[in-house]
Amino acid sequence: MNLKIDIKNHVKNIIGKKISRKIVVFCVDDFGSIRTKNIDAYNKLVSLGNPISKKCIQKYDTLASNSDLKNLFDVLTSVKDQHNNYACFTPFTVVANPDFKKIRANNFQTYYRQSFFDTLKDYCSDYDNVENLWKEGIKTNIFYPAFHGTEHVNINRFMKALQENHKSTRIGFELESICIPAFPDEKAINKYTATYDVNSINDNQQLIESIKEGLRIFENLFGFRAKQFAPGAGIYSPDLNKTLFEEGVKFINVNRYRTVPLGNSKYKKKITFNSQKIYSGQYYIVRNSSFEPQGAETNRVALDTLNQIEAAFKWNTPAIISSHRLNFIGHFEPKWRDKSLIQLKYLLKEIVKKWPDVEFMNADQMAEILVSSEK
Ligand SMILES: [Zn+2]
Image (cartoon, rainbow, N blue to C red; front, side, top):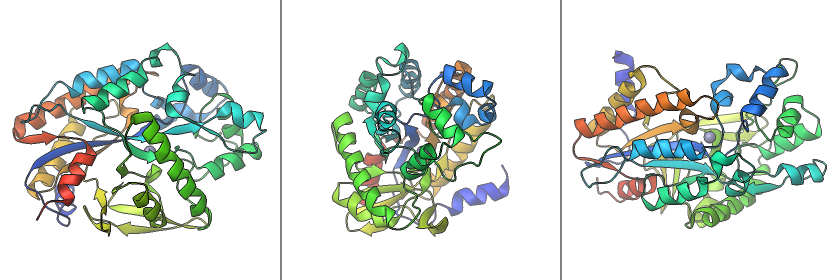
């Protein structure tokens, strides 16, 4: 292994609360959000000259189907930890999507949303059992959601683009897809997926209302209040922490260098450490590992993740592994998902072999244990 990467893996774990238990959690972003609706939408975009085939986020990402979830659950339940618990994904979930019909009926003047489970009703038959699979995943604690935002598009930018007839936005809209790449002859919209980015600080008031509604929708969908929040695209203002706290969010899940928007396209980076206190009872949780196989042909990505887990354990920190839904989606190319799942299965097998005292749990359980630890 590259010495520089090895040192980095260790340095990032030095500061933050310590715990001697070997806990592994997977924080997997983007579930619930639409992107490119389906293969028909994808083919239409390609035929119109859209560069979608060149970007894997847009090329492979869509809602997870029955078969995606079943295949994923099979892999998660292929291993057990010392307490007989299966591996667990915490899907950081976007709970709503644009309601295309209502927005169109209102002539693109007002934004309307619909819940993620309602969005599924407009999808093909491979989505007809998705809601039940989520509920089953929650019950068995192999797929236990946290909050990734109300939707995964910046509403102000989306509505402005629709009103100004921004080509890729309008064509995407007709195909019930969002944040598709810009056509070569138009300007891309900056930080389009950053739900909580602001054009001016005053926008935070509107975002407070959006967060409150998003957390209500979360509870309606899953039957419990969200305890943990990871902002879309990793951008959000700490001005939202108070509302999040009052609404029951105890943990804000971020990268070590989080991005704070200041308005007018200005940002500052804030360094954050694991279990850093925001208020009494609210803390930052920082991811310290990553697993993004993206259809990998070899074990290289899984081996990198194992090294990161080893470094986390060496510093008595849980392994908080960051990943994204797009790795595990087979709608556009089943092989893409299957190869990622082979890597996941390999990773999980190696984890239980290497650390027989490992503990799999969801990100809320881990965060509660971490912040209440004495060290
Ligand atoms: Zn995201």
